[in-house]
Image (cartoon, rainbow, N blue to C red):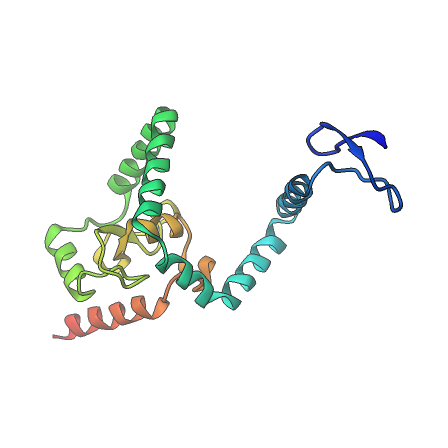
Length: 199
């Protein structure tokens, strides 16, 4: 038995079986963590290939992703909200800065969404999230983000639950490649707007 040092955590361990190559990691946990770190480093070094691979995996696993989100329990949602509140309390300056930037984008964006338009949009979508189509508390979601030149008008706004809104973040539908969201919902909304305009 020879004392060795783990290449990942730095702890000392004793290798019992030395028939094969000399072990470099002390446990299966360290092996998994090192593999995860190796993948993370590769993603940082190859952002474009990583993005394409991630999108390809999501397109192949749409049902798996949808089922996973549906299986979220109230306890898990509560934990997610608690995590957000904890981050806000630990980073008050960043939270205030993000709110300030969002307020500034809304003021400088083209157009102004009225309350009547917002109520009409929610009615068109049957008070459902435009992306997951669930009946949840709704937020104003800009299809083309304000940070990327999107307008604060009815044509660029859909209702979204907080979970979908956070998932989309400041990305466009093209960047999401329809992985999380059903773009048909937005196309349906567009046809509604055209019908309204014709009428």
